[in-house]
Image (cartoon, rainbow, N blue to C red):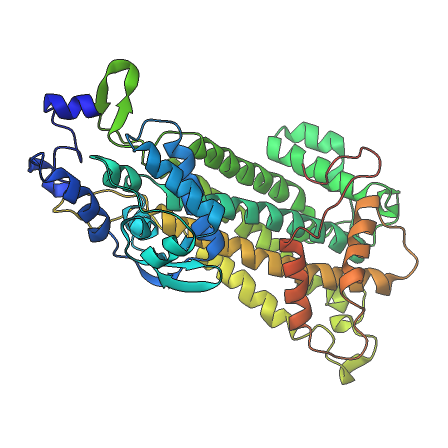
Length: 466
């Protein structure tokens, strides 16, 4: 990079302005001030500040990419970013302002403290950025000739927060599928759709994965014995859980693969190619593949949510489940789980709305130079919101299904579903007299999000996922 500067090469963001100002040539004297000005000028985010967890994910994603050595960043700055993470200096970052073609606004906000500006949380107190750095014992670095752009020109908000979203997707997926399996036990469902030969005849990878997953959870259940199911054929929300769960597992796995690839990639532009003594403009910051993969995962979980909501309603209907209406033994004098149906309906509707594709940017910016963007940060945010809502829907289905199982009396659960039932009962007592269930649903969801729902198949010692 320094050799390119000495030669007077025309390099974007090093010897030229940014965006539409790429046609502006910078004098050598203007370069140092330009780098700091680039950070200040792009700190334009609005909205609620990101959580500390999200800020740390953003910082970590940028540091990982910097360590590949293609950014042209001064080593001292990389050490400063690592020091911020280690010391717990968390800049205030307002999340609305990036379109997904380099997260300039959030990255500018997160690095304002490096130039003594902005705000940051340290040791539980929000203070001016420079003060926070000083309190943590971190010296402000001197910006080199490409440091401002090297800090900013990456997709770290999208990637860092996508990593958190994928973790939430995985948790929600497992919770929803095991809730569905327990609902099958409470409904006394016909398990013929789980026949391995039928899955082989189908030949679809998602279908096979879902079959294996549910067979593992239900292994040992008396429902696998001939003549134990209540009905010859169940509603589709029970029968089709196999292919829907299998496809959802593949969609979430695809999202994880893309996030891991992004974390391992070099996203800088211009990128420093040391072996060629060159600096080339790139589009490595584009996150279209991540955006579209997350859209697919969110849509897959929306299908799972639709079946979950339908199963909950069926379990409460005497004509469908042969169980007391709203799963209360006390008749019409008690509400049972009746009003929980409203929460179920609201969650499913929100998930379905959030799963609608956002699409690409339609309003060009930067004087028309930036005329496309995948809107990745917004897609990450809504996909994470889907996961959080599905986890709460799964919590309700778990509680309702456990009540249905208990009302059935003497039945033999599968090894996996017995563990699920025991998990629910450790946290939520049976519903006898009416009580405020909302706080219990939320508490169970938080337990699931904290990793409390961990199942191991007794026979294989493997996890309960596909």
